[in-house]
Length: 261
Image (cartoon, rainbow, N blue to C red; front, side, top):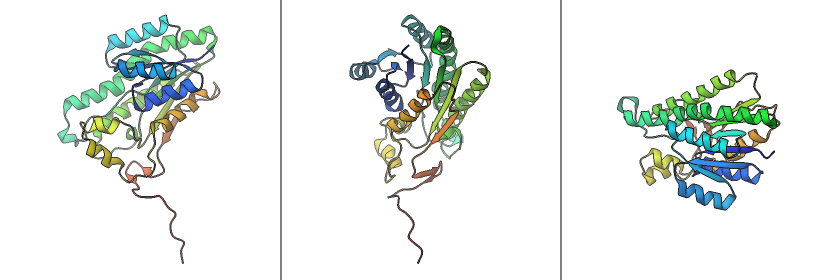
């Protein structure tokens, strides 16, 4: 039985990279995002299929679940879709930005999980052996930083959903995996967060040697999914070497300390 995954956020960044790497490893993949044109281009290139949806809308999530069931079921949910808006202090935060971050990071995860779990169980009963749920959160879920409170809160909420889900599924052969990346240089994340200000977005990565790429994160996702079925990789926190912690980022070339004379 060829394993089949549904990957959200598939029109760009980590989601798109995950579709690519899973296809290269022999998975059937359904890519999900709002931008149908980008999904169709990816399908033509790598042989995935796609479904356009806004995952913060209950009707769209229900339609996705119906599509997955009608088209053969699914073995794995890989939830990458999410995002940040703004870098305001708590006292200056825009309610519409905070609401949007909660909906796309937390509510969408809950809606998808509730809709897809019955399909995962069906595949297990049909002989698949096990199923996977994988959630891409962020190191922002682990450490607060000034100007990040809205995103910190949203990603921490998603991370707590993942931890609770793992406990709730105890006794079922369904793995629950969390991947928490630090600095990842993608085409859209920081640009969208900073309202389309390309200069400000580029400045975040200036002189940082080898920030993570979307492909780096996708490789770790695929590793967790291709591990033996009895192995659950609970949490992977991954950062570029230049980022020792959320607040500690080296700019300039990485090099060894001078030898003491």
